Image (cartoon, rainbow over all chains, first blue to last red; front, side):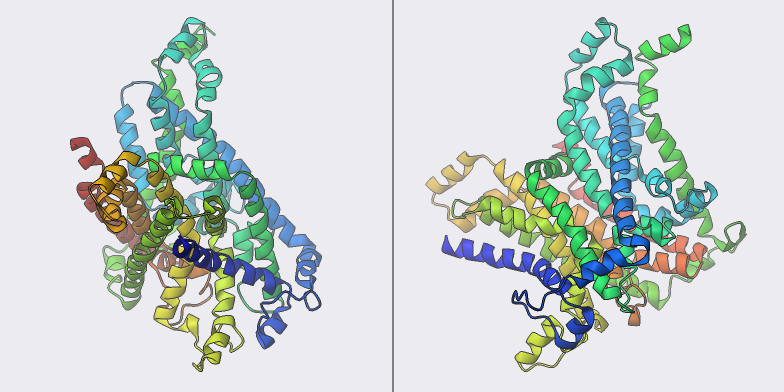
Length: 271
Length: 298
């Protein structure tokens, strides 16, 4: 038992160390950091919040724009994506109609294709649609998620069709059945997909990197990536900006751990 | 009016309306770009509206050293990812699940936290720790042990190690959660009867745990290969401006470089088609040996 706990402590240490390192580094100017290295002890006398001040004093609060863009894109994407994917998954799972199996195979095929190979024509398309450098350009091409469709379809297949018939007898339209009867029954599936899609979107890199052209439209990962060059005081802002990008999400996670874990496992494995 | 009402109540028509978002997205954002990529891969794209067919010339250009390097880097990276990001989280999950461990929730929480970071943010502390100056953390330790400082980001294998480390750091928690879910669903009785038959801990692991976890292991293996061949961020965070001696050059980075930085969309498309073929081939092999078809037969 001592061995197991000791090993877990070692792994926990290696997991937390990079986070500790970047937090400690954020209290030091990067010039000082590169000249003298980082003292790992906590010594409030030499720790300063200057790097954080830099983030908010500079260039029309560009960092706050990144934060706002990240949050808005993530929220809008998640709402639309979960809703539309649920509609499709429900359609595929609850009804039998001509072409159902064919569509389902298409969902599986889209899941297997690395979407990076579509970047170039998608970029062309987004330019033609005049939604380059907009939220719509980031969100629209991937808003219907085949992974989520697959998951909702599996989930709906497990719900008894008697609920739907009961709704029909009570005079609901087919959409009434979906909104009033089936959606409440699909609540756990919605929870799982909200978490999974929001996590994926929050961390997405390559597509926003292509679509978002001006720095006031950047998301956090894109904005921070633009500071990866060691000119001026880029590193000061990169380090403190990274710390502030991590911790709110960690807090959200700590208070909703159960939802995160069950969302991830039901979405990933059972699907 | 009557028609609309009929439509709303029809369970023949309703499903087509439900699946409409997928059909539209498929046509506009999948099928059209797919065909477009395929056509562009046979073209010289001078500007977005000025193209010229050049036959297989883009594909002939794939026989260059850069594409070979990218393919090699992706393959080695994927192998390392499989060798680290599957066994290590599995070990953690088995330890957390055993009766011997204490503070299960605590460790699970800690190990999962890096999964919440974007790859850029995750790369920053690693970039700092493995800096090339003597004062950077790892080099300062090396110096204390009497070893010379290293330029980590300029060495192929050190660079590979950095990418694999960032990936492992971010994925260990996710895979651990998958394995834990799998372990918790295993029937307790199997282990009890194995104990009666005198099986030790290691025997139980290899003869009961591993075979029963096979579906989850295969799922994470599939994801690892898929992610390995489309890797972009783990390299971008270390070599965002230039890739000296093609360190960190992956297939997707090569597409990005050729198409968006050199405006060679035709060649970029040809690389994309090859990436598609690689991923589909791997998927087919997996489906054949482990996946869907197998499941249906059983």
